[in-house]
Image (tube, rainbow, N blue to C red; front, side, top):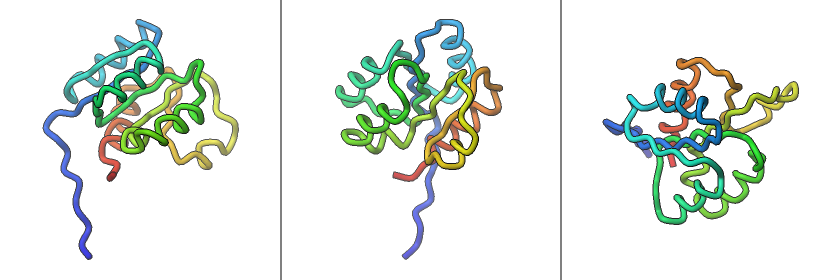
Length: 128
């Protein structure tokens, strides 16, 4: 059986879930060249977007009131194809070993443009 190669779309669709306007603008500026960027201030708006059938290649999700575990539990149960596209961001320091144990993408803020773009590329090229 041969593997099917992922082909990157010409333009990605990106969702940014971020409540801080300054961080939102910075992430949007970095990700805008990839394609369409939608923004929502919190997880409930992101879930409402998924419920409407919106599909994204990359979802940048600020860790705030909802923990990554809760986000993945809810998104994974209803929209597993989208849950695999999430990149979490936080200013909190992850405990030692947490990155190695996590099957999910996480970048620490403040992040560099290259770091965000690599995480976005990895999320967008995840094969469903």
